[in-house]
Length: 411
Image (cartoon, rainbow, N blue to C red):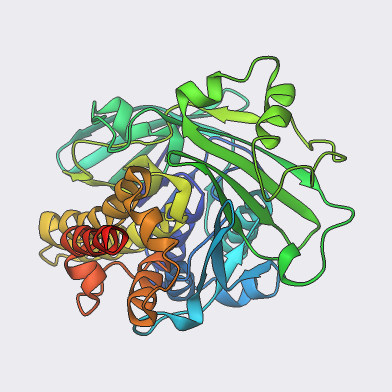
């Protein structure tokens, strides 16, 4: 068995792990990335939000990603029967990026790892962590590649960006009850040969079927589009037949998009992810940090997944570097509390979306421009901005705003 020593091992080569690796490569530290799959590989999480752009830029990816020509995303549209709520990222509160991308993740993630490889980062695809042990301030990691060859890596720190693989969460018994219960997702891709011209064929749209169930349409620049539903297990399970038949029946439940995709074949059999929300007891410990979906995943309704993945991946890499350089790091305050603040904001918005209160706010016929700008900043991912009252007082202000709306209806 081959043995080697690295400063930091990163588990997972998705956006979180890639951003961590990109930052550390720029700072000349010895790293190894272990990825159990072969890229390109399909992944969900195809709609980004502007906060991601700051993180991609700091990790050295922005130039190469811009050159790929991914579909630019300037905002988002929400539809509920005859009601429409549109958010334009250029009309948000505060500073920050006014656009981002919506991407086929297979192509996007490979662009990240290809660039890392060119920068000299050692990424080992189709290599799975099979055991690990921490003692005397070092991890001993045993990994096995697709050919069955094992290697033993000694590392001072692990950044677990394994996403749904949840390597450390499972091996260290860190799983915790999710914040959002009983919600699942089903999705597929189509190739649109007659996509509408203009914004209708470019803009991401969320169509609300009922308070707890919604449909997404995400068009990509390569002519493909992502279609998906999120809802309670009881709703998804009510459609009988195989996954393709059931998905076509679900499409008939839409209003705005009903009939539009009838003539398209699915590029792959619709994939169902049961109980999509994930959570852990804590996101750091002796010699490790969890990032992205390996730590927590809320819900895809506001596309926050990749934002938290890149935010936590970048921050974990910065703090790990400081620690390895002999600087004191308060992981609870500098990492856990920071990430938790953002998660708490988005958790409130997700919870109130499914309670129906946020939907009432979104679809108000005469929204306040100032309030809309502040909410738009949250949707853009700037959930650590204390100047924004919809961040600073997120739970109370949404409750008070909804109460005012209800009083308007009574009057």
